[in-house]
Every structure is written in structure tokens, then in C-alpha cells.
Length: 226
Image 1: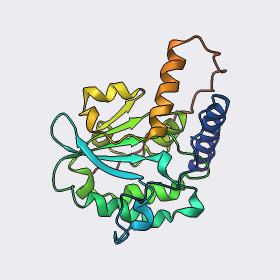
Image 2: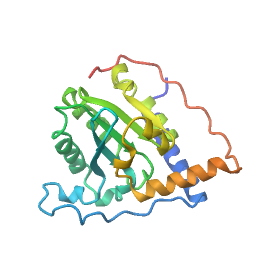
Image 3: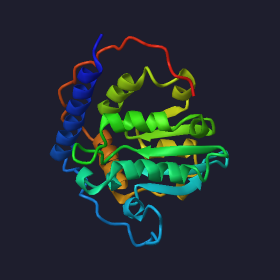
């Protein structure tokens, strides 16, 4: 069975491949130090909130509040305290977890330079206990890559079948219209630009990159139920 260390290394390799493909296509996200004007400096997590990583905007088709997480808004890791980011996530979710809610995760823009560590991801998943998971009705992962697949394998021992059924992978923004009120979404311009390039590439003949090797199978282990 492949070890967690091997999976972590594989995740890093896949993320670097994503960056290389974006560089070839001229689709690298710019470093982000902006979106602070609409956040009050008295906000208890202003140092994190000013980047616009997290937005509360719109509702899904069932009237549930939408929490939006945008990776492209994350600055390089040395400019962001990830412990504070986790606290800010919990602070924001605490305002909505008593009711049903959904999360939209924009994966585009996650890079080696701004990604949280895998140990941080484990800590975050563990701290988002039943209080947060119970009323989370849907998690939409937009523009997923092989990196997401590797993380899925790495975290499979922790994720219950019940929670896994809440996850929907969305390759194109248009697919979100089936599930939520698209016009209400707060979508970063970087994600919109990436979407346009994806659509254009899909509609025109393009050089097909060499296939990536298949991901190793991971032996299933007992899941921790939410």
C-alpha cells in the first residue's frame, strides 16, 4: 500500500504539473495583494479577510447560503498566517452552521507558493467537526485537477461515505447553474479568465499533452463519520 509520504510527494508533483500546464497556456494567476477596500479595518481577522479568500454571497436552488473559497486570492504562504486562516474560516462558518449551507471551492490559483501544508489540511478537517459538517449540504469543487484526486486518496481514511456524497466536481462554471443562483456568485476575475481559456481550448483542436500515469490505488480504511 502506498504511504502517506508517497501520496504527499505525488500531490506536490501533480500541483507542479498544473503550474507547468498553466505556464504553457499563458494562464498563470498573478500574485494577489488586493481586495482590501471592502473590508473594515476593525474586522477581527482583517489580516486574512482583506485578501478576499472567503466570500458569503448568494444562495443555492434550495435557498441555502453559499460560502465561497477562492484559491486564486491566497497570497504566497509567507504573507499569510494559515493558522489565522483556519480561525477565520471557523469564525465565518460559525455564523451560518446552525442552518443548512453550501460551499463553492474555486480550485484554480492554488500553487506551490501559496498552498497550505497537508498537515494544515488534516488539522482543518479534524477541527471542522460535526457542528460544521452536519448542515453542510453540498461542496462544489470547481475546476478540479489531478492534485484534487491525490488529496482524495490521501484523505480517504478520514472522509466518511456520507460526507463524500456531498461533494460535486464541476469542470465548467456553466454546470453550477444546475445547483445554485449563478448570477449571485462572487467569482474572481482570475477564475472567469481561466474558464474562458478552458472553454476556448475545449472548442478548438489543441495539442493533447501526454497522458499522466494512473494514480495508485489506496486500500480503504474505516472512515471517521461526521
